[in-house]
Image (cartoon, rainbow, N blue to C red; front, side):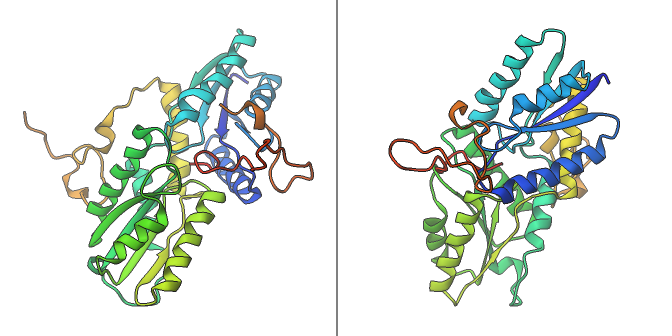
Length: 313
């Protein structure tokens, strides 16, 4: 075996999140039949990223393509993941390690998001123009990552015909979900669709849905729909395979991928082709909530599942 693929996940204490990551990994493997594929996690769950890299080494990999199993390049992709991969590379100079880019925002993921939003089951007949879309991102201390959610919201709004769209975050960044929902209620839309731009479930996605339930219970006059997160949508799996292909081809990418003249961006399909004029060492591999081993707690008595880092996506 020459070339292998390492899918690098964030990790979660939520066993449902790990099971969903495994579903995605299986879909990626099916798209890359000629390559050995392993998975690993930065924290909580096993195998760790180092475990996955060692497994590929033992299978005879001479070149390993490391692909982040995450949506945006916040601190994990900018710091933690390169540290893990580079540490393995330094200890194994005979193996070539190449690092891919995050999923980010691109036409396929926009279409996957639009599919998830469209699939949210409604009990009332309400026009899109009378519906507000609330897109919820993870929220980080990185304004670059946060601004990507605002960009995603705008592209989904323009491409899908909602009457209005707003952005919120599950933690760290403002506005948080519940305050955002209470604010948009004042705008008088008959329906609010909440879409978490996450790859997998976990404490944050469940917290988002719980906030929607609380606000919905207090405001029966407005219909609230909880759209599914991305999960193992076919277009998500295609994107992962694309990221592997980019590393193999050494193909640089710039923002042209979201230009409506270059790609069929949702809502602007007719414009495509038109000529243009003029940090986690202490929790690595400690397990999920489904594992029998006791959790590690900090001295302050709080679990490490705080807002900003503990779900995929």
